[in-house]
Image 1 (cartoon, one colour):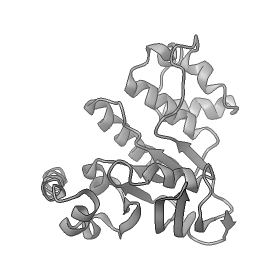
Image 2 (cartoon, rainbow, N blue to C red):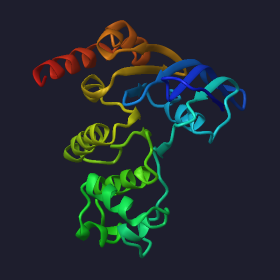
Image 3 (cartoon, helix red, strand yellow):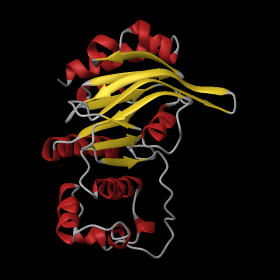
Image 4 (cartoon, rainbow, N blue to C red):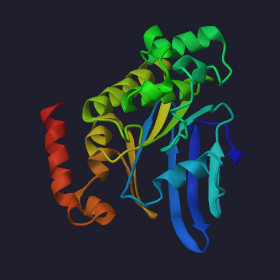
Length: 241
């Protein structure tokens, strides 16, 4: 990975990824500045998770550049965080596996709205939403200024999903952090994202959501059925603005 000084926390240029002869990503370019939110959308198998893994260095790109500002500190929550929920371990003990000053940990649990009762609960007894909140707290340890979230509301009920997204928005305001989020929820994209990156192996579109998520672009990303969803989410956004 390269490093730069400048406004961007991260700049990706013409990134391509080929694994075992199969093109996973082709010519993907985007950038993110401090305190911005970038949403990544696309159908299953479009390369969204692999893009995040490539960004954080878990997978090596075939070509293209990933350029970081030297001051960028990353927090990363993958789509599937392997936690054995049947370990005899409380939420507090889990968080303590990642070294952090006690004062810092106390601040994080306060920001994520985790109380002492929650901290003393065995992770096997946490709901999907509670576990995701715990993993969010884990990703905040170390005071990152860029958070990467891959489907943060997967396996969370509708009420829990709204709670997680609101919490992410509050964290962005309070901690002044940038966020890259993979999401299938276009309502969330319209509501919270400064920019959206549309993937289906290659980059279909990139820009501000209102200008970028046209029926034509969404149809190219998701297929013809995207027309209904586009107008549905636009209507929903306007009704809740």
